[in-house]
Image (cartoon, rainbow, N blue to C red; front, side, top):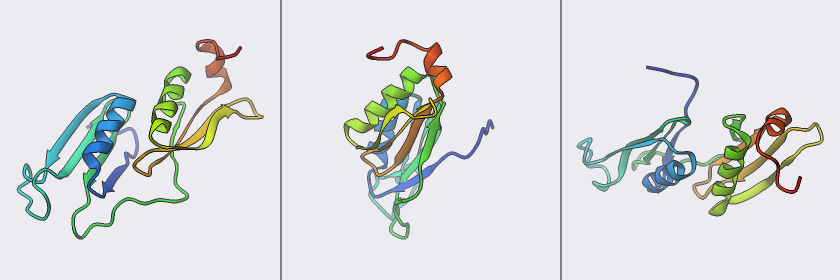
Length: 145
């Protein structure tokens, strides 16, 4: 087992398959889904997600909340992707998540030189995405420069 740090596990209100599929389109990686039927669970629809994961450069897990589970909701919590990839990839992730989500704070250069922004995706997950100015300087040319 290769553990590099905590990986979020979201209990979602019947949207785990859609969330995991969307996150795979954004972040890439291998999608693994097991249904309630696969786990012989009878406390929900047979096709509900009992356990799902996205494994790759990013590691995320999700399941459809069972009848006794509370679905994911958060305030004051950001899932940080600061420096998690090259600046052009991080910009793409931000834009992709914003497509069906909400830009909370645009991805922009800050007074200290680094870049960051906050986007809340369609599933209520708030992502902090950014990179250091030195990474931008060594990457592809910035739009408008």
